[in-house]
Amino acid sequence: MINKLNNMSKILKLSGVAFIALLLVACGASSKEEKGALTDKKAELKKLKTEQSAVNDKVRKLEEEIAKLDTTAVNKTKLVAVTPLAQQNFTHYIDLQGKVDAENISYIAPRGAPGQVKALYIKQGDYVKKGQLILKMEDALARQGVASATQNAEGIRTNLELARNLYQRQKSLWDQGIGTQVQLLEAKGRVDQLESQLKSSAEAIKMAEEQLGQTTVYSDVSGVADLVNIRVGELFQGATAAGPQIRVVNTSDLKAVVEVPENYLASIKKGTAVVIEVGDINKQFNSTISRIGQLISANSRSVTAEAKIPSDPSLKPNQLVTVKIRDYATSNTIVIPMTTLQTDENGKYVYVMVSEKGKQIARKRPVTIGQIYGEQIEIKGGLQNGDQLITQGYQGVYDGQAVTTQG
Image (cartoon, rainbow, N blue to C red; front, side, top):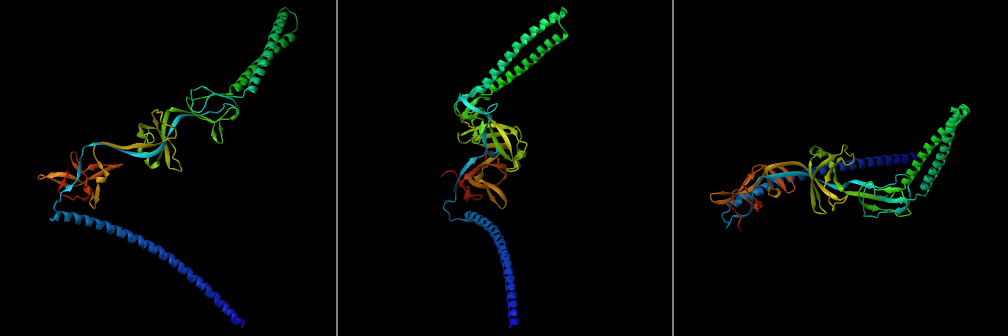
């Protein structure tokens, strides 16, 4: 009986292992089937799109052929609008977003140790000049230091005068053969010692005056105090965790700063023409690249470029601008609207209106295109001066169809 139970247990264990193995195989097969089904669906979609494009071309051709052979139509003349073409200048730009920055932004800070504000002479929005007094910190200890150093120097100076007088008397006696050489040398040594002390005291006065001078804070640039985040009685240290306490911005010397992706670096250099557009105030400025950074950012894969902006009171630092960097320009070329360009299996083409046998008809013109910027495209071949480009109504026109510009 025990043997039968053991055998039954072994059979159940083997059955369980076999079931798990079958389940894993089934899951793997299911996963492979799902991947295979996805690949098949992608391939089928690509095939259908190709067939759809071919069908669309056949439909368009049949429509054109039917329109040509349709003798039942009462009026087959198509109403269109045309634009005479003329050679013109064409420029391509790289459009990037940048910001306005100031060449001179000063974050005011004490020259020495932080101190308590005793007097504040400006308020936010004031115009300040370079060298103008901005604030004064508590200076009682510094003044006391100057007074003490000065008093000490006066005492040394008095003692020095006395020592010099005694030395001169001792020297006079020595010249007369009175006294000893030791007395003379002692008198001379006393004078030398006091002179050295007087020099040290003069340095101490300068140091004390320098410390006193550090309690007054001046602006190092001319500009507008656009941030004054300090009051009398508070500790002035220049910058806190919340940011600078006083900031002076010189808006007379502005620049546009832009990050240029590294794939455009071959198209720009110092002196490259740019157009700076400020959409908020509806203004634009012509300038050139004045500086290009030497380091490509590892994060953004771009390099910083700058272009100077003429002074304008309506511009503010950190204002967003569009920097249009000119990377291509040509003259005496044909330019057409992008919307008039069409494509078939033979390439790009447009329709023009021509006069043939006293009638105005549409003619299909294959063209060679160049650069594209905005809604305009450069045409390098296929069109010339004076051609009448069909700019409206071209969608339903076929080659040789009668057209008119009068409704």
